[in-house]
Image 1 (cartoon, rainbow, N blue to C red):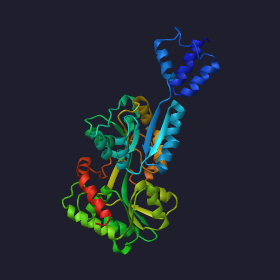
Image 2 (image 1 turned 30 degrees about the vertical axis):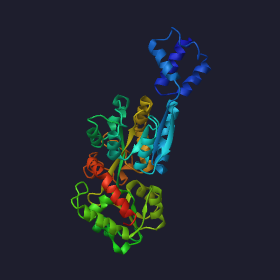
Image 3 (image 1 turned 90 degrees about the vertical axis):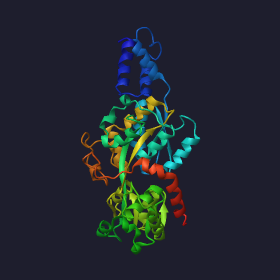
Length: 387
């Protein structure tokens, strides 16, 4: 077999994903055809493919929430992607969406590429600030496996296009220590149990203004997406603070407070509660009526290496990858259960919707909440400090 034919066979293996870019060039060297192969014996398409394969590996930066979520991404998505493509995924972490936005504003164009955004909230904010892109959906064929109900809110913000793909969803419900709090109490009182004098000093709360106001609305019997009496909500949050042991600031702190018994009650992220339950902790979980449902997405920022980033996004949406990440982080994936077999564990996770419609979950309206962010976040900051 001459060099050209051997090269064409290796190139086809590379295109099919059987070997990585690094492995492709290694085999060329072993075959003794690493040089001279770009001659006239190759087609123009072959020469272009060879040139693309010869390009330096691309670096894509991903920023996420850290902890078990980042561990799941690294193990099940980033390592296989790097092995397959020869590209490199550089990771960063952040504690809040506001913190990461501050970094992006201070950074250089292209410094940040892909991040695990807090759903439509962040999507609208970043888009309004000019950080969005228009994804080439032909480069992300696995997007067809994503629930339309999760895609629709993003497309509404950006006139039918996407700068992000939905990746997972969950709820912020009520977590409680079953050694001290009964299932019946929680179901009967719902959100109001977080104000119970009986458990004063053993109650926790996330120091996130949206979550605090959402639960304040539930406590005062109001629609969180259409609050009519903010004075009542502020008073409820002051009362909540009186019975509070502390505000927690991260998922790791949340899990530690519950597992150690320092707190008996708090609103909590469904995936972190699932992780505690899997560790054998006697922690219950309840989504009250109109509880806080949310979704997260993988958002691509302006200035990113688009082809490599879209390839990474598509890889992260591969069912085997998305399912493995979902099982690792304990949040249901965005994949449509009507199109993808999600296995045994995911259907048992809190917040999972087997219909793929998400009709039973209440999501925040981004325009409403983002429109009040400046005023409401400032006011909660005062209440948090005891004013």
